[in-house]
Amino acid sequence: MKTIYKSLISILFITSLFSCGDGTKDDASETEDPKETAQIKQPVNVTGREVSYSTDSVKMNGYIAYDSSFEGKRAGILIIHEWWGHTDYVRKRAEMLAELGYVGFAIDMYGDGKKADHPDDAMKYMKMVMQNMDGAKARFDAAYKQLASDPHVDPENISAIGYCFGGAVALSMANAGEPLDGIAIFHSSVQVAIPPSDKLQAKILVQNGAADPMISPESVTVFKNEMDSLGADYEYISYAGAQHGYTNPGATELGQKFNMPISYNLEADTTSWNKLKIFLGDLYPSGK
Image (cartoon, rainbow, N blue to C red):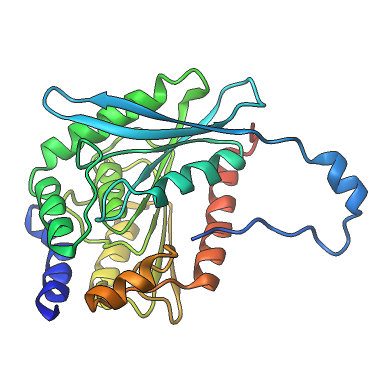
């Protein structure tokens, strides 16, 4: 399994060679009157459904979630999966975003809803995408168009979040100038296939674990220097003691099963999700 671990580290940096959980809701503050809080809160009815969409050559299976108790248009958030593929985990994140008043769209970057049960398969699927960035962009664009065309979404208000592999994709797409208001990435490489340029227009939030051996301090320094040189609007947060995969409640079991340095961290997961809520709230202050 050491070979798998070394290979994973290599693929997380391979993008630079190609030219380049549960979140928890905030509790009511101690000064709030519970009765007043109950009156302010609106009922939420999260509806989720599978969505098929495609490029010229690949069919993809996504999952969209929204609050059906609200009839107006709202911001749409693309969620890009870890290297394991389009799992229930990203669908859960889509539903959590729907609870916050957004339309969450868990997309499928591998095609046909492929999921990996073993790191070898995950590696194969990830390489397939990261070694063909034109194809990756086509898949991302198809997902973007699908979300923008949804009747519940304001097509002028779209952002993306990504985990691990998905974070690298999101950052690459932002660097390529995709019309995203913001991107937020978790336990993700910051040296990616498409380097930053003046095309970058998205606000960026990076939240990584300080104990993640797959993200080198050198790569973080390079990333910050690149962002600073562009005058980009970004924030980099490092959580002490958090390893790779810290937002995924299933990460610890997978790490033990495959002898990989990944594990869930409840505190970092909760804190990073709350930070995401603030990040999105700043982008979309009107909410629903």
